Amino acid sequence: MKLLEPFGAEFDLKSGVMQSAKHLIQRHLSDMRGMYADVAAENALLEANNPMIYEVYTSEVPEEAGQVLYCTTVIHPGRVGDEYFMTKGHFHSLRDRGEIYLGLSGEGYLLLQTEEGEPRAVAMHPGTAAYVPPYWAHRTVNVGKEPFVFFAAWPGDSGHDYGTIEKMGFPQILVSRGDKPALVKNPRFVSGAD
Ligand code: S6P
Ligand code: ZN
Image 1 (tube, protein in one colour):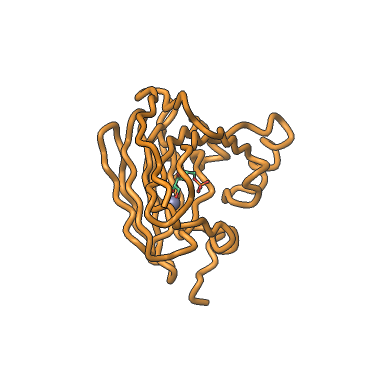
Image 2: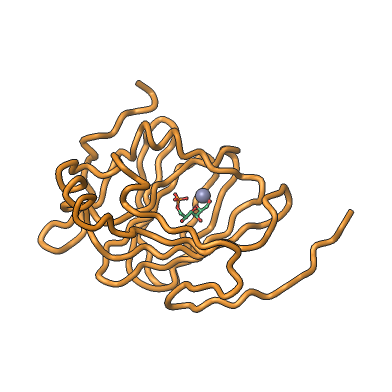
């Protein structure tokens, strides 16, 4: 067995920038078509400037059982219509793999759901360790005016299932009501149990 060398990776606690990042993933609105509730607002933004919604700095750890993967995610501030910018969201391919998030800067929410569409929401601030238990799909949302930045760590063999969320959406969405975040029913949600 070949041992992996221990190492320290530097990253900026406010911006989330990881110096040694293996990849920088940048997701624009066009990468998540159909995920926001307001179709007209989505189309208008796509035509106007197709904004960058979020960025992920990924580690160089191999995606194997026994390893612990980590990354930082930066969700930019903004909205599609009333709905705040968010990540695509996913289940882990191996459903019994959990995850831990640590809020670094900005204000956000972790939205979760079970396979049956049971929803939960956890507010995240700098210093919040938000726990994603096994079997819960997860998506993060920036409800503030600054970038929302968090660190994540999860088992190396988890994998990502985006397809199920592309079909279902999440039962709840976060929208701006009087400049404050409000959790409301997602009109486009398709229950997995149906
Ligand atoms: C990975 C973990 C996060 C997300 C990242 C982007 O298991 O949950 O690192 O990958 O926040 O979100 P998404 O839904 O596009 O992967
Ligand atoms: Zn995950």
